[in-house]
Length: 257
Ligand code: COA
Image 1 (tube, rainbow, N blue to C red):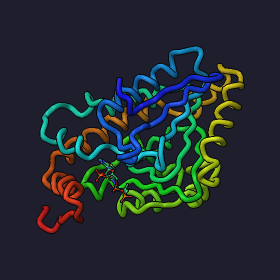
Image 2: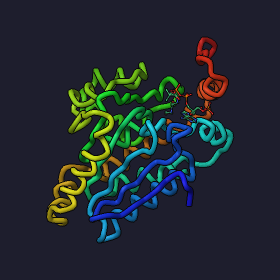
Image 3: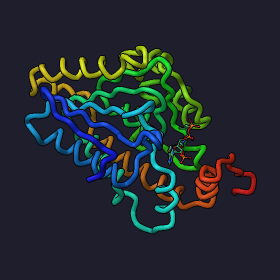
Image 4: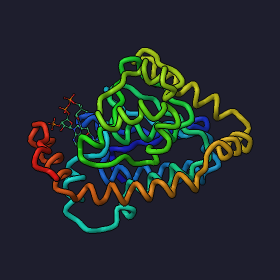
């Protein structure tokens, strides 16, 4: 178990904290395994009524660890075997309420995770982005379906293709969040909402969520996205993007073809 994910169960709320603030809570393979375990526990454990995702430090999550991308790109295994997909499967299968508390950066899976949460509280100054194409990758977590369903095709396409961040107020206006509040209020308001949900009739709230989501379609799409993601991840254009990040320079796609 990694110290980069912390869990705490209190009054029916399982708080799951990303705890790697020096790397803006970028998620490693070990962290995905711990996130998957926590999400599977949330479903299986009757003591857990609600799961709450949050980040330690100034940021929610800077997405997948790019060094991990680089090392996985040198391997040949099926991406669906990776820790991230165990976590995504657990998210797709989760029938209990999920809440997120988002301050600072929410990048890549830091944004697409929110599409699986039922209530999201963002800081007004939060910055949400999904720069998969900037990394020469492809969107994941069924976000090719869920993001346009929430914000519309035009906005979703721009989020994917330009990779620019939207702030917390915009996220609220676009339907990605329930509340946009001062940064220092985010955790308390999200916890308050999670506690309220934890007091609701457990079967009723679970069945309502199940009726609102097509879990089989979500998991099917996650696997189709994984195939594209996996082939892109090993492409020369993605290797160039990962190297550019490690060398702190913009990527050069002019010779890619
Ligand atoms: N993977 C690995 N390390 C990461 C990371 C990631 N996804 N995101 C941030 N970090 C590290 C940085 O390398 C840096 O480490 P260092 O102090 O050892 O140099 C540290 O976290 C702080 O990040 P930094 O880039 O200096 O902060 P910033 O405020 O200038 O920029 C971001 C913040 C989020 C815009 C920038 O870090 C970034 O673009 N990260 C990559 C996001 C991304 O593309 N994720 C994958 C999405 S699919």
